[in-house]
Amino acid sequence: MTVLEADLNYAPAQLMHVHLMGICGTGMAALAGMLQQTGYTVTGSDNHVYPPMSVFLASLNIPVQNGYDAGNLSPAPDLVIVGNVITRKNPEAEALSKLRLPYFSFHQALAHFFIRTRTSLVIAGTHGKTTTCSLLAAALHKAELDPSFMIGGIVRQFGTNFRLGSGKYFVAEGDEYDTAFFDKESKFLHYRPHVAVITSIEFDHADIFADLEAIKQSFRKFVGLLPKDGLLIANLDDPNVAEVAAKAPCAVQGYGLNPSNDWSLGELKTADGITSFGVLKNGASWATMKVSLSGRHNCLNSLAVCAVLHHLGVSSEKISVGLSSFEGVKRRQEVRGIEKGITVIDDFAHHPTAVKETLSGLKQAYPNQRLIAVFEPRTNSSRRALFQMDYVLAFDAADLILLRDPLPLDGVPTEELFSSVRLARDLSGERNLVAEAFADTDSILVRLNSILRHGDVVAILSNGGFDNIHTRLLEQIKTLH
Image (cartoon, rainbow, N blue to C red):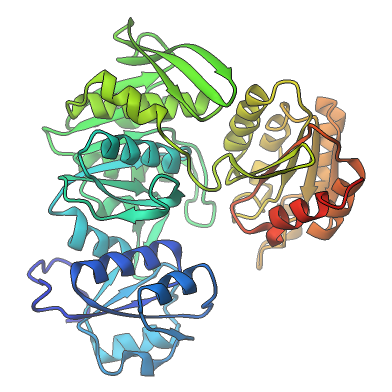
């Protein structure tokens, strides 16, 4: 059997040894832990075995081979799980094909082993998936419903991005990116949604999708998976979401700013790191909620969670306790440290809309302090000229913008690449903002060293490690006079 695609007859007693290719990815390492917790013997391989995933896997006594090789499949495992990082020409993947061993993608495996026996709650959309998933999982746990989850960020309440609970709900972050080299459909098409949230739909992942219509078509497929007795919670303020939601085979509840939605936001107030917001249900006041997150976008994320939990029968009082006790997600407006009165914040924002909303939220949270945005374009989409002009409108909330030059994309002509120098010029000329471009991270750190003062807030925006700039900057600030 070359692909374990539809056969659902495997059980732990039959399937003892599972091998994960690309095991050091955040999701793959979490899956390895879940499989081991369920009773399987787990091994893995990866090309880059280093902390924190290497430490995490070692703590579980899961053996990991450094490098991909046919020998990693000997003795032959009962099942191989192939990570998204693996290409068709990977030597271990080639050996897998020759040996005709059964294999799954990560997302097939997650659905097969953990989702299919539970009620699947899937959060999808271009923006806000990780935060909304984390809010939902934490609130379900606070309501003593003991959920399971797999999320693309570390949830502070749990200190991890995965959990196997005894309750009936599984919270999954539904990504529209492709699944594996042998499965170019979107990841979320494997997650068997019963209740789904769509936060937004915009063009992204230019390396995978040709245009916005291609993305909407993938979301249409996702919505089509919902059963007739399921529910779609949709941000109907977004016309792309509204278009996709119109084809849902189940009930749809809209949420957003417009009071015509089933769920809408009332008044927002931010003070001392806490945002309170009114919740309107069918236009009438329903509750006031509080959350330790800043920005209108995070209130909308929380509003979607209110709608899901209400549908599941959780009272408004318990929802309020769940949201107010939420401790946040690593790399989402995460305060990495405060030194000499200077606050350093790490955030995953990279799409222009996410950058705009994140900076706007931070300005609300720190209204009387200078906000310095440090941005690294790192994704396949952000390193293309695709969003060059959109970024011009994304930094208005910042008092100073420092931009890192992106690494070039192989095979993409120079004229099709994003330019930080051009963006800095456009921000200065068109938006009257103070913006500068830098060739590398070291140059940014030198510039920050010369300008930082007590009370500044430095928001570092990147979906990657950004050369460990957060830790380096905090150490550098300690030496300031």
